[in-house]
Length: 488
Image 1 (cartoon, rainbow, N blue to C red):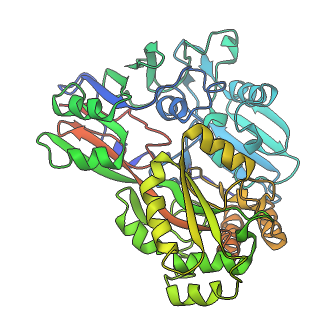
Image 2: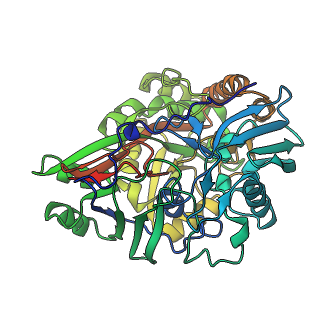
């Protein structure tokens, strides 16, 4: 079954690219709040490394658009066998790396093999690989021991990067040899990253000759640099920074969609009140998730389940537990006073305000009371790991990360046999349609069982000079392709 179109469909913002050499052939400076410590995405598992380098310096076999849909990358098309065990990718021809070496299927095979051998971050996402072969220069054949319906998704990220097999000894921590529209001109870890247009790029050349990222650890300093013109753009920025700069002369603030999910997570362990199904459901009725979503400046909308709008298997589940304090009160009344006493709501500082709102909403009932603890990041991580909590506010930011609720050994300790089987069925899917349908069923099951309370999806924010154009606005917390970026 064909899973990819033969026609390359790029990011929508790249449909009207400027040609280098025009009056717009200039440099752009971008402020960011995190900088990778290494250029080697295989060893630096940070989101920053992937966000800044993928689609700019490095290219992947498959890519995604601003709607998080899979699109052709270095592979112009692909086919998956009916049994889901063989994926055949057809690569572009005439592609070279920035050092002039030819990129072909042998490099793709070598890169995949290196991921496995070196146990690159998230390598398990490739699934059970039986073999990887290149029958010719433009064909890669991946054979699996069992189906992996998210393999192509994995190949759109760091695991799908194609490296130069002839440059295996290069110092990739400080040097990048990619096939993308930019090369790395200079890198100062923790400070700056300068990209220069690649004159050997096989596609349409980048609109800007230089793109430089500058790290700002202070939000006020970042805002000042935008207003005084030291920066052309900043992305992604916090909701508070975006709000503070909205309406400023010469600047424009844009919002975009993400897969980030903010949830009131439940500890379903046997020692927790939330191990009781009725208690979990009572909390979901008691919490006004829709009201919270409408009040949070970073909220794109209420969620209701473990899959966001931009992920396969999404269904609007917000109607399962409408805010109903009478229903919650009736359900809480079944518990004796000695059982329904105090719950521990443990959060890091960033969620203090939201946690205070949740505490107030819960305590509208006579019982339980809420012991709110706001901890340092280090202490918070330890408490969650040790399982000494009942409720916490946290975010999940990956595509296809809902599977964590099928793992009884996860931090949520959610152990539900039917949910585990439903997720296993989804993972056994041999095509996209079956995978999406089965993930939808899985998501509904665990939401109905109130494994947690999924409050809202996040939006991301970009602030840029009105002279800047050609930049993405959605999914920029995950990747930021800038080939179309330019400044007047």
